[in-house]
Amino acid sequence: MKRYLSLDILRGLSIFGMVFSAIIPHGVLPAWMYHIQNPPPAHSLDMTVSGISWVDLVFPIFIFCMGVAIPLAGRRRLDQPDDTGAGRRYLAEIFERFIMLWLFSYLYVFLDFSTVKGWWPQLVTIGGFLALFPLYMQLSKTTSKHTLILLRVVGLILTASIIAYGHFKFDEVISLNRRGIIIFLLAFIYLFGTLIWYFTRNSNRMRAVAFAAVLIFAAVTMFFDIPQKLYAIKDIRWIVNIEYIYFLLILIPATYLGDLLHYKLNASTPYDPVGESRTNGSGTGVPLILMALYILWLMIALYKGYYLINIFVSLVIISKIHRLVEQRMPVYTKESAIASLLGLSGAVLVMIEGGITKVPCTIAYCFITTSISIYLIILIDRISHNAHNSYPVRIFSGSGSNPLMSYIAFGSFVMPLFKITGLVLIYQAAYPVGYPWIGVFRSAAMVLLTMAAVAAMSEKKIFWRA
Image 1 (cartoon, helix red, strand yellow):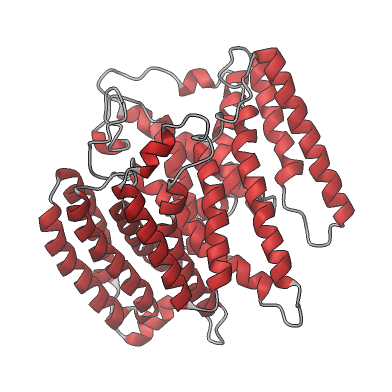
Image 2: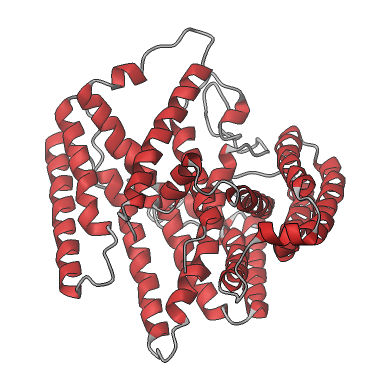
């Protein structure tokens, strides 16, 4: 089965957002250009601030993409005729991938010495980036098990040697508390979410029960402030985080959409939403425009505190979107129904919870960002069918299909290379006071350059996989 292009594009967009938001000029842009709870100019965390910006969407969108991908990859492994051991091997793969993701969250941090002055630390950082290839590079199916093990061992030896060198040479600290928190979280979300999908893959009712159990768990633990109490215990905060469970409220619905997509892609009739829309005889522009306007409305309404008005506006817009989808884009009817349910539920929950925040994570945050993710993938699905060979699509889909490499390539390869060659002086050149958007466009160009390089690697079938 071919890769689902729209999913790769959406994942690529979320990675762009993660990297881009981390390098844009700080303290000088409007509040909506940052995490809403880290407002300029100080960017100190303020958990009393409610709302979401585009920056607050990128992480849940990535979780959503992970959830959609789980059934697409899992059923390809499990739905093999006359293979009685497929389930056992798949369970082993789940834990293997969890360990490799968990390890990656530490390795790329321990291998990054780019903040140390001088060209030698930059060169060692690039060496650390290259050392990850034998450890994470996806090999062909014809590769022998002996060769695979040998490469992984070589990768472990290389990374361990570079980390040890950096520790003694550059005084880099090796600690369980030093890890990439996003990849660290994703490892646990992947583990729990994939296990839930595996044991409920043949029963939507059981998956709904699992979702309800997570919802009840989230509501109870939030009510009694359990996350904050556990975080206060310093000895366990590095590993115990209740949000591992909360974010399953995004991933579990995404696995349902992944199953829907799997059956569409493997149906006897080729999956062609554009062709179906033409056959239906109605234009699709209006529902797509309404989806985009609804997302924009949410950004404004939730930040401004229009909670009560948002319930009524969401009810009107979402109901109209769903009716139009049923009429003009029936291939997305079930996806639209899930987005509608989660969006309306989220609007009500914002009132009940007194706001929407990423830190601490609220249930409304999970529901609304999942609804937005569904609308975004529908939008991208329609657009990409008409522009699937364009260079921008190739950049985002190529980097989205290679997420581990895309996530660290800027910090672990591009910037160290710029520092060694002196190009960093151009990148960091001062811009006129009062024109911070120059820095924004410069940051966007740098991230796009990095993603284009990763996309080129993907087109050459060079992938990192956990």
